[in-house]
Length: 131
Ligand code: HEC
Image (cartoon, rainbow, N blue to C red; front, side, top):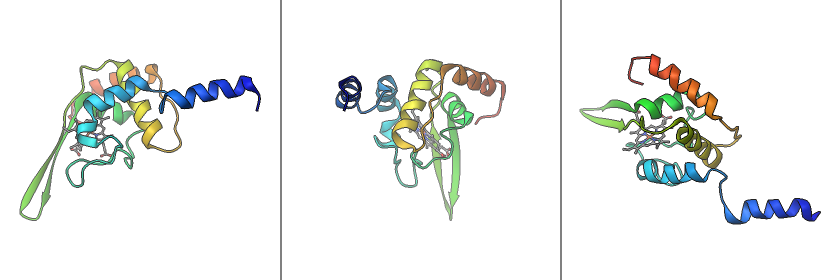
């Protein structure tokens, strides 16, 4: 193979498992304790991200912005499912987390950009219902 092509490829694959290093760091700091490193979740308590249908929609941004709090009734008991809000993150950080998650856990990856995230954030801050 041509050296000009091989070198960048080697660099890309040898040092990093993801091009979204900030997203990876933020995911490890803020998400992995609940959703696990591989996005598989924790049985009944924490949904898997890897099989979520939400990840490419603007609602993912809203979920990170507002958090979510569901109570599931099962027989005579109930289960509180609570995801905290990550309002303090900038749209750059949110974009990097979403790209890291989608690139690592979901097939058919398309990159999200900061402008899209900013627009999604504005739209969900206009809705006053809790996500
Ligand atoms: C304290 C535990 C906790 C943390 C930390 C957390 N989550 Fe969640 N997450 C949850 C719970 C619980 C739900 C389900 C909420 C519900 O249904 O009410 C959820 C739902 C989700 C969903 C939707 C899954 C689906 O399809 O229903 C996604 C995507 C997600 N989280 C991503 C993230 C990301 C990315 C982060 C880090 C920025 C994060 N979560 C941090 C607990 C957590």
